[in-house]
Image 1 (spheres, rainbow, N blue to C red):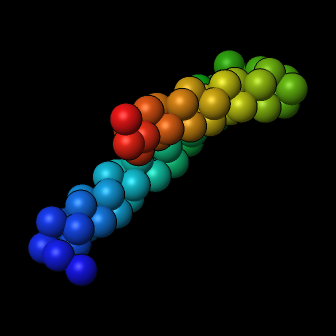
Image 2: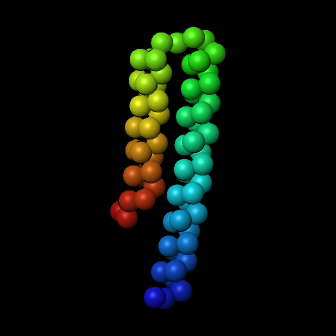
Length: 66
């Protein structure tokens, strides 16, 4: 494995760790916000699902090789 490949893999792991920590923080913040205003659990599930869809689209865009 060349130096360039190992650097690319290292940076990809760091990017994924940052994205995972950002995702956990964002979902925690959204859940806390929704619970503060006593939203029904259905609305909480929809909001969390939308956050995960947006984060998955962002991750796919960042990790695509095009």
